[in-house]
Length: 77
Image (cartoon, rainbow, N blue to C red; front, side, top):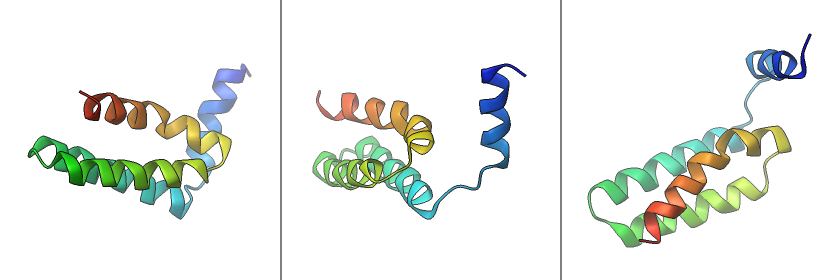
């Protein structure tokens, strides 16, 4: 089994932590706030999501990194 296949298999079998789920929800809230023009509120959600991100396991960080960076890039404009 290739390393990529093992990683994909682990993603299917590994349960998500509550912190990871909360991080996803917070990123979604930040995106929603940004979409309706509430930039300051979106920034607060981003900071909360980033704080949650720092406490995640390595494999969980890999899962949300791109979403968090996309949000960051959207908010700095």
